[in-house]
Length: 468
Ligand code: F6P
Image 1 (spheres, protein in one colour):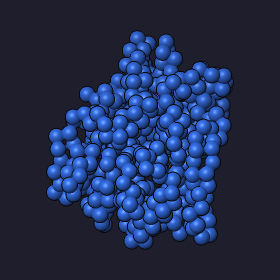
Image 2 (cartoon, rainbow, N blue to C red):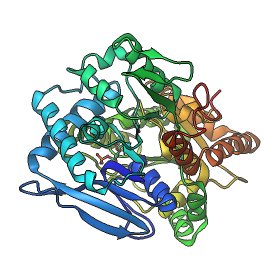
Image 3 (cartoon, rainbow, N blue to C red):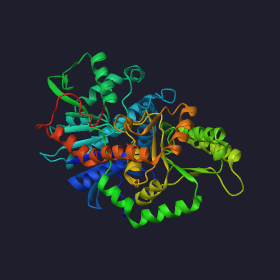
Image 4 (cartoon, protein in one colour):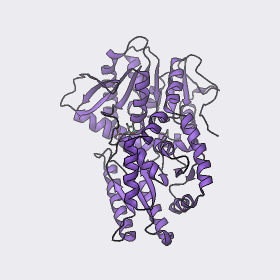
């Protein structure tokens, strides 16, 4: 198996800190079990691109990385990936920038990825490409003669056709994706948007099993909702490092209720709206002033992109405003932390928290919601408040689902969660836990690989496990 993603991110020790997205977490688990090579950008810059492969073995995973030129990083990563596709795919066309240089840089870097990974691909290998950075990689590899089975899994949402058509050369981009054998999405909503596009804009035929007829081939398109490494995470949650983190957080709040949010610092995560909702809760519930703390862990991400600098400033202002209004000499209601923590410590923080606040405005899946559930004490679990616009909302029906744009709704739901009787908390948690356990990362990987291998793989309809 050759796995390709923009970034290769293997934890050096038992738990990696930093701004790890769901992709890194899931691929680490998938590769550790299945073996293979993980290829991508090192995250490093080089004056002139050489295509030199740096091969390493870390924590049981073989990685091969290349360095990119400053112009590549600017046009491909900061540009087309994170100033064009990311906002567009998260329905933020107000933030989407269309610049021809970005598009050219994106094509160039995808071609560089293709040239560099080519010598690693052997005849029977499966090639599994990940995410919006590398949509045309499959077609670039086909042009270089690769006949292997190739699949793409998109970790983000897929936008509605009406938004996608605002992208110059949208049809070329989507046509390049049809060179893969399998296209995977996080849920049926994004899958349906994709199928709508190929039917409406390209006039292609979609079969009953959602495969797409394209130039005499059948491209499988399906939902494969990603999960967490349930066993690894629950073990981590019960270990000494998690217990120590749990106790440290608990003792620091002196009996107050804890709400926790853990997100990359990204405008798609709805952090500003979340802070406002918490401020609203404090204003509407003066009897609770001083009795609840919001711990927001938000490691910075993509700091060279203006919209990320903007959201960072915005959150600093909002935190200052809310803390100024509701703090007293011995207490601040929002603890806003711009750093990442090892996963075992995060598990301890989740377990200590009475409420998990996962309120993205749009999110492909959101594994924090699943980690929060997995880390709870089943005898006395916390309550998950989950945005209806997270991919995870399709599976986690027993969370308290909210519209993150409505500060009133989120504030009322915080009240409801704090007042929820133990029996209801246990009941909801047991159902959520069953879903998180069943739909874990191993199942995601197995389902995708089965479809990619192409044997006994295609079930009819979409297979969004546990989706009502
Ligand atoms: O999970 C979505 C994602 O964009 C991944 O592709 C990426 O690895 C992660 O978020 C973190 O983003 P970045 O590598 O830009 O910091």
